[in-house]
Image (cartoon, rainbow, N blue to C red; front, side):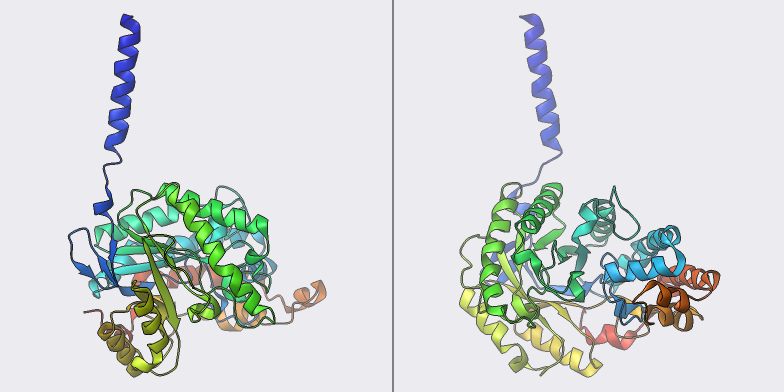
Length: 411
Protein backbone atom coordinates (compact mmCIF):
# COMPACT_ATOMS: atom_id res chain seq x y z
CA UNK A 1 0.00 0.00 0.00
CA UNK A 2 2.84 2.37 0.87
CA UNK A 3 4.43 1.81 -2.53
CA UNK A 4 1.09 2.45 -4.23
CA UNK A 5 0.68 5.77 -2.39
CA UNK A 6 4.20 6.83 -3.33
CA UNK A 7 3.56 6.01 -6.97
CA UNK A 8 0.21 7.83 -6.90
CA UNK A 9 1.77 10.95 -5.39
CA UNK A 10 4.55 10.85 -7.98
CA UNK A 11 2.04 10.59 -10.82
CA UNK A 12 0.01 13.50 -9.46
CA UNK A 13 3.18 15.58 -9.22
CA UNK A 14 4.07 14.74 -12.82
CA UNK A 15 0.61 15.73 -14.01
CA UNK A 16 0.77 18.94 -12.02
CA UNK A 17 4.23 19.80 -13.34
CA UNK A 18 3.28 19.08 -16.94
CA UNK A 19 0.20 21.26 -16.55
CA UNK A 20 2.40 24.18 -15.57
CA UNK A 21 3.86 24.22 -19.08
CA UNK A 22 0.44 24.82 -20.59
CA UNK A 23 -0.77 27.73 -18.48
CA UNK A 24 -2.81 29.49 -21.12
CA UNK A 25 -6.49 30.21 -21.35
CA UNK A 26 -8.86 31.45 -24.03
CA UNK A 27 -8.29 35.00 -22.77
CA UNK A 28 -4.59 34.84 -23.69
CA UNK A 29 -5.29 34.65 -27.43
CA UNK A 30 -6.39 37.19 -30.00
CA UNK A 31 -10.18 37.03 -30.14
CA UNK A 32 -13.04 38.25 -32.31
CA UNK A 33 -15.70 40.75 -31.29
CA UNK A 34 -18.01 41.41 -34.22
CA UNK A 35 -15.95 42.94 -37.02
CA UNK A 36 -13.01 43.64 -34.73
CA UNK A 37 -10.00 41.76 -33.44
CA UNK A 38 -9.38 42.15 -29.71
CA UNK A 39 -6.05 41.63 -27.95
CA UNK A 40 -5.74 39.80 -24.63
CA UNK A 41 -5.52 43.27 -23.04
CA UNK A 42 -8.97 44.10 -24.39
CA UNK A 43 -7.77 46.57 -27.03
CA UNK A 44 -8.92 46.62 -30.64
CA UNK A 45 -6.26 45.35 -33.01
CA UNK A 46 -5.82 46.49 -36.62
CA UNK A 47 -3.52 44.26 -38.70
CA UNK A 48 -0.64 46.12 -40.38
CA UNK A 49 2.35 44.27 -41.70
CA UNK A 50 4.03 42.28 -44.43
CA UNK A 51 4.48 38.80 -45.93
CA UNK A 52 7.66 36.75 -45.68
CA UNK A 53 7.09 35.63 -49.25
CA UNK A 54 9.68 33.43 -51.02
CA UNK A 55 11.36 32.31 -47.79
CA UNK A 56 9.52 29.02 -47.29
CA UNK A 57 7.71 28.99 -50.65
CA UNK A 58 10.10 30.21 -53.37
CA UNK A 59 8.52 31.90 -56.40
CA UNK A 60 10.41 32.14 -59.65
CA UNK A 61 9.69 35.76 -60.46
CA UNK A 62 11.48 36.84 -57.29
CA UNK A 63 14.66 35.27 -58.68
CA UNK A 64 14.10 36.68 -62.18
CA UNK A 65 12.99 33.32 -63.62
CA UNK A 66 10.17 32.88 -66.10
CA UNK A 67 9.65 29.16 -66.75
CA UNK A 68 11.04 27.97 -63.42
CA UNK A 69 8.14 29.63 -61.66
CA UNK A 70 7.30 27.33 -58.72
CA UNK A 71 9.41 25.67 -55.98
CA UNK A 72 9.39 22.29 -57.72
CA UNK A 73 10.47 23.77 -61.05
CA UNK A 74 13.08 26.03 -59.47
CA UNK A 75 14.60 23.07 -57.64
CA UNK A 76 14.66 20.98 -60.81
CA UNK A 77 16.39 23.79 -62.69
CA UNK A 78 19.06 24.21 -60.00
CA UNK A 79 19.70 20.45 -60.00
CA UNK A 80 20.16 20.54 -63.77
CA UNK A 81 22.49 23.52 -63.39
CA UNK A 82 24.81 22.48 -60.54
CA UNK A 83 23.60 19.05 -59.35
CA UNK A 84 21.50 17.90 -56.38
CA UNK A 85 24.21 18.22 -53.70
CA UNK A 86 25.00 21.84 -54.41
CA UNK A 87 21.29 22.57 -54.82
CA UNK A 88 20.63 21.21 -51.33
CA UNK A 89 23.44 23.39 -49.97
CA UNK A 90 21.99 26.42 -51.76
CA UNK A 91 18.59 25.91 -50.15
CA UNK A 92 20.07 25.58 -46.69
CA UNK A 93 21.97 28.84 -47.10
CA UNK A 94 18.89 30.45 -48.61
CA UNK A 95 16.65 29.51 -45.67
CA UNK A 96 19.33 30.49 -43.16
CA UNK A 97 19.88 33.95 -44.66
CA UNK A 98 16.65 35.10 -46.30
CA UNK A 99 14.87 35.76 -43.00
CA UNK A 100 16.81 36.30 -39.78
CA UNK A 101 16.19 37.96 -36.44
CA UNK A 102 17.50 41.22 -37.91
CA UNK A 103 14.75 41.16 -40.54
CA UNK A 104 12.05 40.74 -37.91
CA UNK A 105 13.51 43.53 -35.80
CA UNK A 106 13.49 45.83 -38.84
CA UNK A 107 9.87 45.01 -39.71
CA UNK A 108 8.82 45.83 -36.16
CA UNK A 109 10.81 49.08 -36.21
CA UNK A 110 8.81 50.22 -39.24
CA UNK A 111 5.61 50.06 -37.21
CA UNK A 112 4.24 46.69 -38.33
CA UNK A 113 2.35 44.56 -35.83
CA UNK A 114 1.77 41.40 -37.88
CA UNK A 115 3.75 39.08 -40.15
CA UNK A 116 2.18 36.55 -42.50
CA UNK A 117 4.34 33.49 -43.11
CA UNK A 118 3.51 31.65 -46.36
CA UNK A 119 4.68 28.04 -46.37
CA UNK A 120 4.64 24.92 -48.52
CA UNK A 121 2.94 21.83 -47.08
CA UNK A 122 6.03 19.78 -47.98
CA UNK A 123 7.86 21.37 -45.04
CA UNK A 124 5.82 18.98 -42.88
CA UNK A 125 6.30 15.80 -44.91
CA UNK A 126 9.14 13.59 -46.07
CA UNK A 127 8.76 14.76 -49.65
CA UNK A 128 11.69 16.27 -51.54
CA UNK A 129 11.63 19.99 -50.79
CA UNK A 130 14.22 22.75 -50.61
CA UNK A 131 17.16 20.38 -50.21
CA UNK A 132 15.65 17.90 -47.76
CA UNK A 133 13.96 14.57 -48.41
CA UNK A 134 13.33 13.59 -44.79
CA UNK A 135 13.37 15.33 -41.43
CA UNK A 136 11.93 18.48 -42.98
CA UNK A 137 12.57 21.63 -40.96
CA UNK A 138 9.14 23.28 -41.10
CA UNK A 139 8.64 23.51 -37.34
CA UNK A 140 12.26 24.46 -36.78
CA UNK A 141 12.05 27.40 -39.20
CA UNK A 142 8.65 28.56 -37.97
CA UNK A 143 9.55 28.19 -34.30
CA UNK A 144 12.55 30.45 -34.77
CA UNK A 145 10.55 33.10 -36.64
CA UNK A 146 7.78 33.04 -34.04
CA UNK A 147 10.27 33.49 -31.20
CA UNK A 148 11.76 36.52 -32.98
CA UNK A 149 8.27 37.93 -33.52
CA UNK A 150 7.44 37.49 -29.85
CA UNK A 151 10.61 39.34 -28.89
CA UNK A 152 9.62 42.32 -31.03
CA UNK A 153 5.90 42.29 -30.29
CA UNK A 154 4.62 41.01 -33.64
CA UNK A 155 1.70 38.66 -34.22
CA UNK A 156 2.02 35.82 -36.75
CA UNK A 157 -0.38 34.44 -39.35
CA UNK A 158 0.50 30.99 -40.71
CA UNK A 159 -0.55 30.71 -44.36
CA UNK A 160 -0.49 27.38 -46.19
CA UNK A 161 0.49 28.83 -49.54
CA UNK A 162 0.97 25.45 -51.22
CA UNK A 163 -1.46 22.69 -50.23
CA UNK A 164 -1.28 18.96 -51.03
CA UNK A 165 -2.41 18.38 -54.61
CA UNK A 166 -2.59 22.12 -55.17
CA UNK A 167 -5.45 24.37 -54.16
CA UNK A 168 -5.01 26.94 -56.94
CA UNK A 169 -3.83 25.17 -60.08
CA UNK A 170 -1.08 27.62 -61.00
CA UNK A 171 2.57 28.23 -60.14
CA UNK A 172 1.77 29.90 -56.81
CA UNK A 173 0.66 26.61 -55.22
CA UNK A 174 3.50 24.49 -56.65
CA UNK A 175 0.89 22.23 -58.25
CA UNK A 176 0.57 20.34 -61.52
CA UNK A 177 -1.65 22.93 -63.16
CA UNK A 178 -4.95 21.93 -61.53
CA UNK A 179 -6.41 22.23 -57.99
CA UNK A 180 -6.33 18.50 -57.32
CA UNK A 181 -6.86 19.10 -53.60
CA UNK A 182 -10.60 19.39 -54.22
CA UNK A 183 -10.82 16.05 -56.02
CA UNK A 184 -8.21 13.90 -54.27
CA UNK A 185 -9.23 12.27 -50.98
CA UNK A 186 -5.60 11.37 -50.33
CA UNK A 187 -4.53 15.00 -50.71
CA UNK A 188 -7.38 16.12 -48.47
CA UNK A 189 -6.40 13.71 -45.71
CA UNK A 190 -2.83 14.95 -45.88
CA UNK A 191 -4.14 18.54 -45.75
CA UNK A 192 -6.16 17.74 -42.62
CA UNK A 193 -3.26 15.89 -41.05
CA UNK A 194 -0.75 18.70 -41.56
CA UNK A 195 -3.09 21.35 -40.19
CA UNK A 196 -3.88 19.15 -37.20
CA UNK A 197 -0.18 18.68 -36.47
CA UNK A 198 0.49 22.41 -36.84
CA UNK A 199 -2.46 23.26 -34.57
CA UNK A 200 -1.36 20.73 -31.98
CA UNK A 201 2.20 22.04 -32.04
CA UNK A 202 1.11 25.69 -31.64
CA UNK A 203 -2.08 25.27 -29.59
CA UNK A 204 -0.57 27.23 -26.69
CA UNK A 205 1.37 29.79 -28.76
CA UNK A 206 -0.35 33.11 -28.12
CA UNK A 207 1.85 35.01 -30.59
CA UNK A 208 0.02 33.30 -33.43
CA UNK A 209 -2.95 35.39 -34.53
CA UNK A 210 -4.45 32.67 -36.66
CA UNK A 211 -4.19 29.82 -39.15
CA UNK A 212 -4.92 30.70 -42.79
CA UNK A 213 -6.14 27.45 -44.28
CA UNK A 214 -5.10 27.97 -47.90
CA UNK A 215 -3.95 30.73 -50.23
CA UNK A 216 -5.92 31.86 -53.29
CA UNK A 217 -7.87 28.66 -53.99
CA UNK A 218 -9.22 27.70 -57.42
CA UNK A 219 -7.79 29.92 -60.14
CA UNK A 220 -10.37 31.24 -62.64
CA UNK A 221 -8.94 29.30 -65.59
CA UNK A 222 -10.92 26.08 -65.35
CA UNK A 223 -14.09 25.19 -67.24
CA UNK A 224 -15.43 23.43 -64.13
CA UNK A 225 -14.60 26.38 -61.89
CA UNK A 226 -18.13 26.69 -60.51
CA UNK A 227 -18.19 22.99 -59.65
CA UNK A 228 -14.84 23.31 -57.89
CA UNK A 229 -16.15 26.35 -56.00
CA UNK A 230 -18.90 24.21 -54.46
CA UNK A 231 -16.23 21.96 -52.93
CA UNK A 232 -14.37 24.81 -51.27
CA UNK A 233 -16.51 25.47 -48.20
CA UNK A 234 -17.04 21.79 -47.24
CA UNK A 235 -13.27 21.30 -47.29
CA UNK A 236 -12.82 24.35 -45.04
CA UNK A 237 -15.45 23.10 -42.62
CA UNK A 238 -13.87 19.69 -42.28
CA UNK A 239 -10.43 21.25 -41.75
CA UNK A 240 -11.81 23.48 -39.00
CA UNK A 241 -13.41 20.44 -37.35
CA UNK A 242 -10.08 18.61 -37.35
CA UNK A 243 -8.19 21.62 -35.99
CA UNK A 244 -10.70 22.12 -33.18
CA UNK A 245 -10.02 18.61 -31.94
CA UNK A 246 -6.60 19.81 -30.77
CA UNK A 247 -6.80 23.61 -30.68
CA UNK A 248 -9.96 25.40 -29.48
CA UNK A 249 -8.46 28.89 -29.23
CA UNK A 250 -6.75 30.15 -32.37
CA UNK A 251 -8.61 32.14 -35.00
CA UNK A 252 -9.03 30.38 -38.33
CA UNK A 253 -8.74 32.53 -41.45
CA UNK A 254 -10.62 31.70 -44.63
CA UNK A 255 -10.08 33.24 -48.05
CA UNK A 256 -12.15 32.80 -51.19
CA UNK A 257 -11.92 31.21 -54.63
CA UNK A 258 -10.47 33.04 -57.61
CA UNK A 259 -7.44 34.69 -56.00
CA UNK A 260 -9.23 35.37 -52.67
CA UNK A 261 -11.69 37.66 -54.45
CA UNK A 262 -14.96 35.74 -54.96
CA UNK A 263 -16.84 35.30 -51.68
CA UNK A 264 -20.10 34.13 -53.28
CA UNK A 265 -19.28 30.43 -52.60
CA UNK A 266 -18.81 31.26 -48.89
CA UNK A 267 -22.44 30.89 -47.85
CA UNK A 268 -21.97 29.78 -44.25
CA UNK A 269 -19.86 31.26 -41.47
CA UNK A 270 -21.72 29.88 -38.46
CA UNK A 271 -19.84 26.59 -38.16
CA UNK A 272 -17.21 28.05 -35.83
CA UNK A 273 -17.07 31.03 -33.47
CA UNK A 274 -13.47 32.03 -34.17
CA UNK A 275 -13.46 32.70 -37.92
CA UNK A 276 -12.33 35.71 -39.91
CA UNK A 277 -11.87 36.26 -43.63
CA UNK A 278 -9.05 37.36 -45.91
CA UNK A 279 -9.07 39.00 -49.33
CA UNK A 280 -6.35 40.00 -51.84
CA UNK A 281 -6.00 42.92 -54.23
CA UNK A 282 -3.41 43.78 -56.87
CA UNK A 283 -4.34 46.68 -59.11
CA UNK A 284 -7.72 48.27 -59.65
CA UNK A 285 -9.20 51.39 -58.12
CA UNK A 286 -7.41 52.45 -54.97
CA UNK A 287 -10.44 54.01 -53.27
CA UNK A 288 -13.25 52.38 -51.30
CA UNK A 289 -14.94 51.33 -54.55
CA UNK A 290 -12.02 48.97 -55.16
CA UNK A 291 -12.88 46.94 -52.06
CA UNK A 292 -16.65 47.44 -52.14
CA UNK A 293 -17.37 43.70 -52.48
CA UNK A 294 -15.14 42.90 -49.53
CA UNK A 295 -16.75 45.54 -47.34
CA UNK A 296 -20.22 44.28 -48.23
CA UNK A 297 -19.29 40.67 -47.45
CA UNK A 298 -17.64 41.71 -44.18
CA UNK A 299 -20.76 43.64 -43.16
CA UNK A 300 -23.03 40.74 -44.11
CA UNK A 301 -21.10 38.29 -41.97
CA UNK A 302 -20.39 40.71 -39.14
CA UNK A 303 -16.89 39.20 -38.92
CA UNK A 304 -13.39 40.68 -39.40
CA UNK A 305 -11.81 40.95 -42.83
CA UNK A 306 -8.17 41.61 -43.66
CA UNK A 307 -6.21 42.08 -46.89
CA UNK A 308 -3.66 39.27 -46.81
CA UNK A 309 -1.82 40.43 -49.93
CA UNK A 310 -1.57 43.80 -51.60
CA UNK A 311 1.26 45.59 -53.39
CA UNK A 312 3.25 45.55 -56.65
CA UNK A 313 2.03 49.00 -57.62
CA UNK A 314 2.94 52.67 -57.55
CA UNK A 315 3.70 54.27 -54.22
CA UNK A 316 0.76 56.64 -54.64
CA UNK A 317 -1.62 53.72 -55.27
CA UNK A 318 -0.32 51.81 -52.27
CA UNK A 319 -0.59 54.78 -49.93
CA UNK A 320 -4.14 55.53 -51.09
CA UNK A 321 -5.13 51.90 -50.63
CA UNK A 322 -3.52 51.76 -47.19
CA UNK A 323 -5.52 54.78 -46.11
CA UNK A 324 -8.71 53.33 -47.62
CA UNK A 325 -8.26 50.07 -45.73
CA UNK A 326 -7.63 51.90 -42.47
CA UNK A 327 -10.76 53.98 -42.96
CA UNK A 328 -12.82 50.83 -43.61
CA UNK A 329 -11.38 48.61 -40.86
CA UNK A 330 -9.71 46.10 -43.19
CA UNK A 331 -6.25 45.26 -41.94
CA UNK A 332 -3.45 44.39 -44.36
CA UNK A 333 -0.13 42.65 -44.92
CA UNK A 334 1.79 43.84 -47.99
CA UNK A 335 3.44 41.44 -50.44
CA UNK A 336 6.36 40.89 -50.22
CA UNK A 337 8.81 41.96 -47.51
CA UNK A 338 12.00 41.17 -49.44
CA UNK A 339 12.75 40.79 -53.16
CA UNK A 340 15.39 41.51 -55.77
CA UNK A 341 15.52 45.06 -57.09
CA UNK A 342 12.15 46.73 -56.34
CA UNK A 343 8.59 46.55 -54.92
CA UNK A 344 9.33 45.52 -51.35
CA UNK A 345 10.50 46.80 -47.97
CA UNK A 346 14.05 45.45 -48.24
CA UNK A 347 15.64 44.82 -51.64
CA UNK A 348 18.83 43.02 -52.60
CA UNK A 349 21.09 43.19 -55.62
CA UNK A 350 21.77 40.05 -57.62
CA UNK A 351 25.36 38.91 -58.25
CA UNK A 352 27.17 40.04 -61.36
CA UNK A 353 26.72 36.75 -63.23
CA UNK A 354 23.25 35.91 -61.92
CA UNK A 355 21.19 37.14 -64.85
CA UNK A 356 23.54 36.19 -67.66
CA UNK A 357 24.33 32.73 -66.26
CA UNK A 358 21.68 31.44 -63.82
CA UNK A 359 18.63 33.29 -65.17
CA UNK A 360 19.67 32.63 -68.76
CA UNK A 361 19.82 28.89 -68.06
CA UNK A 362 16.52 28.96 -66.14
CA UNK A 363 14.77 30.65 -69.05
CA UNK A 364 16.38 28.53 -71.75
CA UNK A 365 14.91 25.62 -73.68
CA UNK A 366 15.37 22.62 -71.34
CA UNK A 367 12.69 20.34 -72.77
CA UNK A 368 14.99 17.32 -73.16
CA UNK A 369 18.40 16.18 -71.97
CA UNK A 370 20.12 17.38 -75.10
CA UNK A 371 18.72 20.85 -74.55
CA UNK A 372 19.88 20.78 -70.92
CA UNK A 373 23.42 19.81 -71.90
CA UNK A 374 23.53 22.45 -74.59
CA UNK A 375 22.21 25.23 -72.34
CA UNK A 376 24.24 24.41 -69.22
CA UNK A 377 26.90 27.07 -68.54
CA UNK A 378 30.16 26.57 -66.69
CA UNK A 379 29.07 24.98 -63.40
CA UNK A 380 31.68 26.72 -61.25
CA UNK A 381 30.61 30.12 -62.55
CA UNK A 382 26.98 29.27 -61.86
CA UNK A 383 27.75 27.95 -58.37
CA UNK A 384 29.74 31.05 -57.51
CA UNK A 385 26.75 33.21 -58.48
CA UNK A 386 24.38 31.04 -56.43
CA UNK A 387 26.61 31.29 -53.36
CA UNK A 388 26.87 35.05 -53.75
CA UNK A 389 23.08 35.23 -54.08
CA UNK A 390 22.69 33.64 -50.65
CA UNK A 391 25.02 36.30 -49.23
CA UNK A 392 23.29 39.20 -50.95
CA UNK A 393 19.94 38.28 -49.37
CA UNK A 394 21.29 38.70 -45.83
CA UNK A 395 19.68 41.63 -44.02
CA UNK A 396 22.91 43.58 -43.71
CA UNK A 397 23.48 43.34 -47.47
CA UNK A 398 20.00 44.58 -48.42
CA UNK A 399 18.76 48.15 -48.64
CA UNK A 400 15.51 49.75 -47.53
CA UNK A 401 13.10 51.14 -50.09
CA UNK A 402 11.92 54.06 -48.00
CA UNK A 403 9.12 55.17 -50.32
CA UNK A 404 7.66 51.69 -50.32
CA UNK A 405 7.72 51.50 -46.52
CA UNK A 406 6.14 54.94 -46.26
CA UNK A 407 3.36 53.92 -48.66
CA UNK A 408 2.32 51.15 -46.25
CA UNK A 409 1.33 53.70 -43.57
CA UNK A 410 2.54 51.44 -40.79
CA UNK A 411 3.08 54.30 -38.35
